[in-house]
Image 1 (tube, one colour):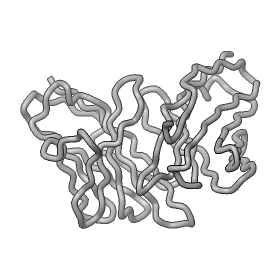
Image 2 (spheres, rainbow over the protein chains, first blue to last red; image 1 turned 45 degrees about the vertical axis):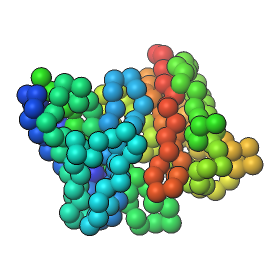
Image 3 (cartoon, each protein chain N blue to C red; image 1 turned 90 degrees about the vertical axis):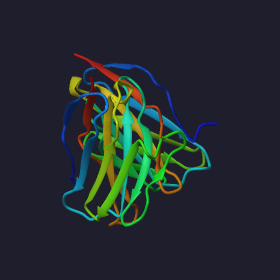
Image 4 (cartoon, each protein chain N blue to C red; image 1 turned 60 degrees about the vertical axis):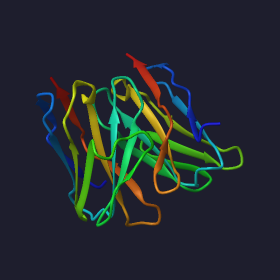
Length: 117
Length: 109
């Protein structure tokens, strides 16, 4: 299957700072990437859909100014958590849609665990 | 009705048995379906995709799709303790995947 990487895998930061997470599709070009967050023992929650060259589409209840998404190339999307607070501590997972094939399949990155102190 | 529904479990099976995981979907999602496995603390990993009515086999895994009854299932033959994980059923909705809440599978030695 296709490979999606995420960096960093784990980050600890102080309250009030900003954190950037990168998501890369390594062996395919992804016009669409997705950002999810997941709390312990809870379901995946889609935060936003990231489209290359255009603004991200945010799900209801997700603050666009808090979670900045940039999809500047066909292989890279970034999520920046601005002015992070302890309640932003979570597991953030990106996925990328492989446009090849009849049906587009979504592959997940390994995730980034964010802890805000 | 939720677009994709799964029983949260846990589903407990002994090692070597067949584990059967089920998922139902509504008309609001399209006809492509995916099964992901998620180990605790890890991200989801694609196991199978299915688009046509009937069965699709890959090693110990068999995905089944019944469009008339709107359900998708995943069978795991010869279950191993390493199969213990949460299994997510997903359907392609409008521009995004719609996930079920996942079924936790426990395979006991």
